[in-house]
Image 1 (cartoon, rainbow, N blue to C red):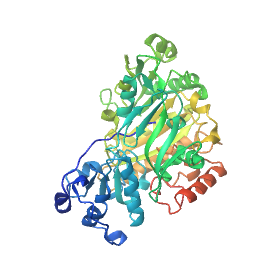
Image 2: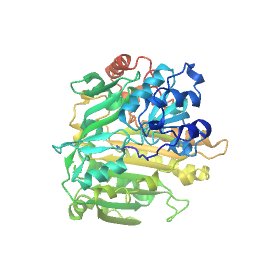
Image 3: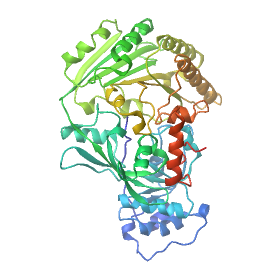
Image 4: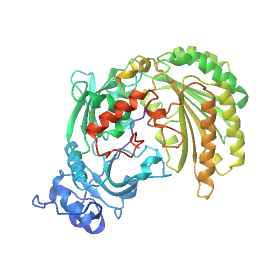
Length: 493
């Protein structure tokens, strides 16, 4: 899935930091400053700068709420129940992360590592403490053998994909990102820095590939990369009216065939939403396909969809890093921040009857809640998953290799006092339709989309097989017995 985005910031002087809250460059601070005793929750800005600061490498920064950059560094995609950040520390070197975590551990100060703030689970709202901002750790290096790349913890998709593409490599179409992890450099809750892979801490390597939020801070990772086998990707976008819904989903089921879609048909995204250029009252069905290859190959695969009369169509061929633009999945088109009410699930196939019920519920509620309507949408994701299914299910903590699609509903909560309750009730109704549409199948929730809702269980997220949570908790007890990493959909309750 998506690796979050980052930005780069630098520090100023100690006096400015302690007086005005500006960032500090600790390369200019004498090393003889020592940590002063402080009670855990009485750590003032002066104490943090004077005790933690001298331990950090040159270029590291500490920022407080009075700093003009603070709000940007602590902004998040979902602002509905955001974490409460008291101080931001930006490490300049990977080794600084261990120093920061060790400092927090010794002072009983809650901490949370952040890449870009795109995680949207409501469980983050329970956090109050120090944010480790990884935005300066953005190195990406291709190994000499051209088989792997080392990516630092602050890198993100919008930088890594173009850099690899320009060098002739990709990571797509070869399973999940976690399936291509070779080695992780991890900082544990007590500040220890360890290497994690198939032979070093293999139990933790298993757990972090599917539940990594609960175990440590990844300061860098070695991932497999693959030679790009095409110069362009072909995209084809369709907008259909509501009467075509059954035909579209039936055709999707035939093409995607329970996860057996052609591997080159890499991405398939859809939306039920209001398209104001077509109608402000009647929702439409949008779908976009991305194909790793030339137009003639792609259009042969997409011929059944071309036979369904569309309101509008658009197609083209672009380099892989640019396909997010026309497919409406770039940061500029769909990632504006807001107070989002969200629900999500996974499915093995599309239940056509359930999706008609979802459409009718959506049509009913955009009329019932006109203030919520413009930002509401049902979003559908499908991928070529043969490589995902080829990996043995028990080999990683990720439990949902038998699920082929992601479904999500989101709507922006307004300032109206009843808006949140209405939005969340609307979301729950869609969840109920999806659940009823797949009787006999245990609910499945993708961990990066889980939002900590009462009706989503830990088994939904981490797997219904009892041994999975048992094993995760055993690994947790060894590597994070104090449950420091407990704010992102924790399985310790």
